[in-house]
Amino acid sequence: MFYILISYLLGAVPFGLLFGAMAGIDVRRSGSGNIGATNVNRLLGKKLGIATLLCDVGKGFLPMYIVDLSSSDPNIILFSGAAAFLGHLYPVYLGFKGGKGVATALGVFLYLNPLAVLPAILFFIMVVYLSGYVSLGSLLGTGIMPPLVYLLKGSREQVILAGFVALLVWLKHRDNIIRLLKHEEKSWKKSG
Image (cartoon, rainbow, N blue to C red; front, side, top):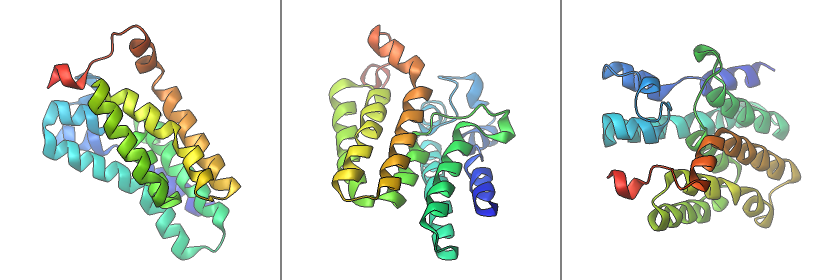
């Protein structure tokens, strides 16, 4: 239980908000209002956008890695990844109103099954390049992770965790999905 709690608290650290505060901007009140790397990149530039991305990926990966060094129970490792991911989505520090979880999901997936991540990232890049929508790339990239983990001989528990993470990413993107269906989503190609 200790590992899971610490993983949640680490996952709940809002790096995008902290970087924004250092630059004098509350990222929750500007742009898309999201604390993630895409909004930070739009508002504060590439350097802080990349820093946010790396920190958010790290807080998904590191708890699982650290717990793996300390515990022989694979389920505790998986629960730690889930807790870190939930921390990003529902951070106690921000009244349980967090980000959409794509970068933190990437960190979880990198630990869970790194071989599955490469085709998912390539698919994400292709979708964003062709469509201009980061949200669509994020949705489809996370959506193919559970079958990729399964095809690459992941355990049943790993497939379930990948499905859980992907489902929550989709739920957090419900507004984006509505905008995509209405052709009202902001295009990366048009904005930059």
